[in-house]
Image (cartoon, rainbow, N blue to C red; front, top):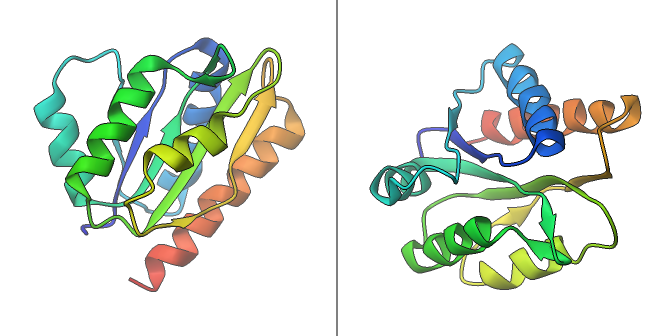
Length: 146
């Protein structure tokens, strides 16, 4: 992969988390491509997925699972089997969430190392931002070995 990095963001809280992660990656000179899953350009998404070394999925929880657009992208990624080496999930939830387990099952065919997800209830707080900075650092360390 090109070391590129794909992110998807949907609601306000998740978007704040994604912005922090993007800033953290940019400071560490990790090239980033963002893709908003409200965008209907599946061809562009497929291209980004195939080239990415790391895929980070940003999703709010909807009815205890990932947003339907995120589920669609997960199935697409599973079918394309990109060469991505790493996967993580960031997102927010209002109640309980099984989003990590459900997304992991959807991309079962990908041979990726799952990096620690960052989930928060409601709006992100200082400890959540610290976890996002840690995730950016982990991604930078992994990409340095590629």
